[in-house]
Length: 114
Length: 113
Image (tube, rainbow over all chains, first blue to last red; front, side, top):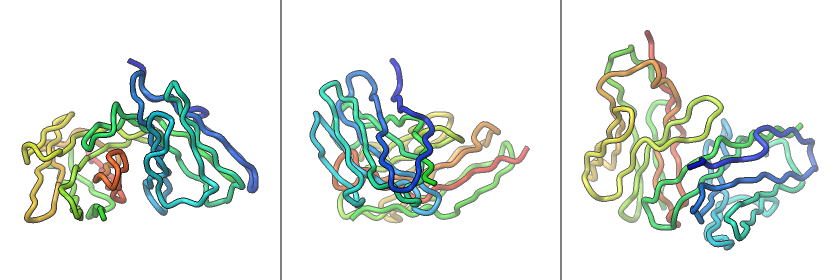
């Protein structure tokens, strides 16, 4: 079974631009969560989608948004990029929404904002 | 609210020595706890998880962790370090939603030959 895939793996943007990152979960997984990883703030939860609905949202500004499609693939969008948005963005998929379900992480998209 | 604290951002051990990575949690509800490992330029891989069953949890690659409610701890151990264990390790606890993980700041493990 293929793992979680994220595209692109690397991205360079300039301040003020917007960016869209993509995540394809493991086949059969309906929950997709997004995390931001930076040296300063560590790993922080962005949001979770299940069956095309946002279930949870972390403490990030409205510039960060996401969506999920009927095939469970998910995208996250960051508008009006700031230098501080430079980070590794990780996507994780899970079979369900019960506590204790294992989350399987993708390799991440490394975003650099210049 | 849920949170975890990892003591020691860097830990060095000799090959063959005991590995001990510390994690303390704070949770207003019975927690679900996880240890993940991250190798350079890769995502996170689950080592083990505690979900209120046995307090001693065995994971992959010879790692195990013991849940101690009285100490609010979930320390990760491995009896004998291998060079391939060099990586960053993260402790995490579930938050308000089932798939909302709160991560610790991570511990980078170096294994000295």
